[in-house]
Image (cartoon, rainbow, N blue to C red; front, side):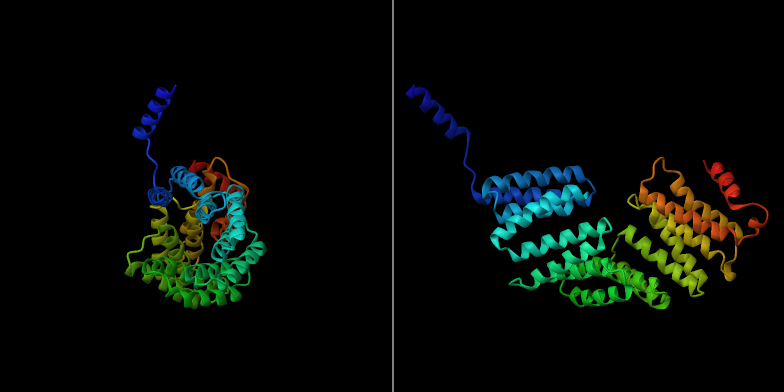
Length: 353
């Protein structure tokens, strides 16, 4: 029996090694970087697997109540695309951070709660969480510039009064210079777009154009490629130019938005359709009046949704908005004098399929 035990011990010592904490930390970092790479490529399942491996190592090495484990739970919550999947991870992370009195961790958790509630259109709840995040970040031993910036942008997005949103964006702009150079570009483009959206909603089109152009210039000067975001910037900037009477400039930007959407597999149905909606509207302007284009692009905006086999509730609502808007435009064309909208629409949609 002693010989058997000795043999097993030798086998164990020769075939198994006890890995150091530094080596395990290195493995965790490897899986985190691998997950980040997969998420950036929209390979979400692969990213989730890598993150699960990092989580398992952190839990085994540092324990269920460790900051290392909580940080990965926070990251899992951030990367989850579905509310019900993200919440359990964030809830666990919050509980651990509370036990550890980790102020920075709690600030980050409440910020993620805010983002989740914005994504499901619960802006009132989002604002509550963002404000809690801001309170905790203010109590951190070191200034959390990036987090503060994100919180102010988040509050601006969740605030329904666009004039108030502008105040939060202005505060975020003062923090922009504290971010690293790469973030100053990507976040700068996003922030200037948000300014543009606000001024567009407030019917201050000249100011909207100014900020949209800032976003475009920053992107071009730094070779920043985010086709989905830039498509929206060119779209609404172009539409503002048309409203302000600069029709040719507006059309140039709108067609640029079409190209960006077509080349971007992540563009949503709405992203693609709303540009055609704007083009349809634009061709009613006196300087470039073209009723055939009004009908062509108005129909195209609806066809994008019609081509889908199944639409969810949100998509159905947006499709109805587009169709109603197209009907208003149709009624301004000579075609409306000879054929009612629904008959014309069904006839031409059928041709398209």
